View 1 (cartoon, rainbow, N blue to C red):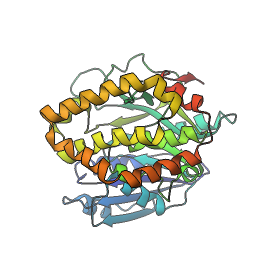
View 2 (view 1 turned 60 degrees about the vertical axis):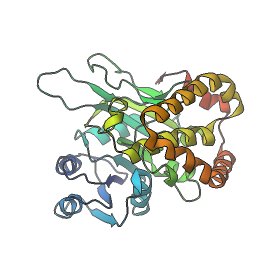
View 3 (view 1 turned 135 degrees about the horizontal axis):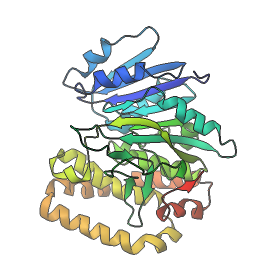
Length: 332
């Protein structure tokens, strides 16, 4: 099924435990024509070997091991450089899309020629353990007035929730479909995902640029994907220090790059309170993340240059972007 070529892009880093099931789910996708691009970020487990030993004649493979860990952002940029497919599915190694996942996403986008669809995501659920009820992982992305971004429905019981197709602010990089035309349109200085984000929040930042260039992001509830998800806010103390540092650093980068005057009036107080709470937490509980503040200061000139480049590319009205701080979705 399908006529427009699709590239499934996966970035790996010590992902050997997840890769076999992920690669099997990609091979089982019904959408065709399909190609697979895997970029490895300096894994020291069997990730490279597992991909190399997984040839499928019907699934063309490009496999690029890198000598250093450039994070999800850098790895995904490398993957995108290896393909010119008009459709791109960004997929985490711990995600397992259902066989009709891509087909249902494409069908939803095709139903709305009146929209400028740049991205579309499905209903991500967490693996069941024992006889527990199904739990949602992500049903699109939302923003809060404190400049936090959340996956809609994350941690909620799945039954009866988030069953409506919507326009949403954004889509998680774990399992979302993007038009290559939209990704090329929002690229900044050759970067589609901004390389300075390395890991964490890079998908939210990309969705800001989609909205600022007038691209729509959709949510299709009938497209299902299982996502095990390693990193959750509740597990912050168990996460590696470098991941937590990037998470904090990238929170400020989001604001520096995308906050405007009207938004500052709307969200200034809650975001300032959140900043103070984050600083207090780092000083008291997570001093390894203090490196985020020094990084921001040391790279202030590059940040300003990048901010100016992003601002020059904006075409949508500020109100069109700011609405997403107060809306969870717009029915289709």
